[in-house]
Amino acid sequence: MILIEELENFHYLEGILKRINRLTSTPCVIDGKSISVGMSIGASIYPYDGTSPELLIETADQAMYRAKKGGKNRIEYAQPDTRCYQLESAPSHEISTQKIFNYVI
Image 1 (cartoon, rainbow, N blue to C red):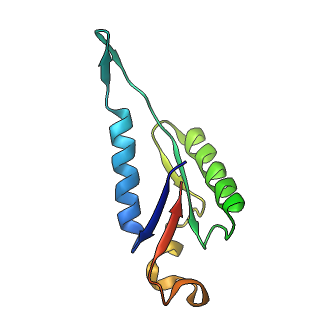
Image 2 (spheres, rainbow, N blue to C red):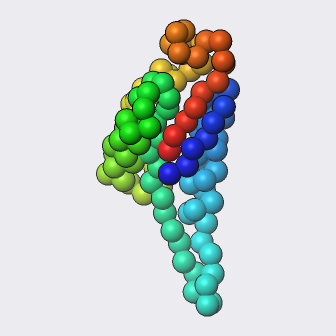
């Protein structure tokens, strides 16, 4: 699990997750043998996917299993329509004064 805090927009998070995915799929050489590792990523975002750590972990876990089911090296979010994660549509009572997102993956 990786916790990423105080990101100002969804696209920045998406870029981080794509870089992590790319880095983990890069082959490395150990004892002269090339080894490749793949990673499926499931992400949940506070407050959209839960307001407790347990719920955020649960929704990220469900997203990860959808990613695995969809193929190798995929990124899935708890919400199938990622447009709901846009800063402009943030629930005003939750984060409008902070202008921050907190992400858990």
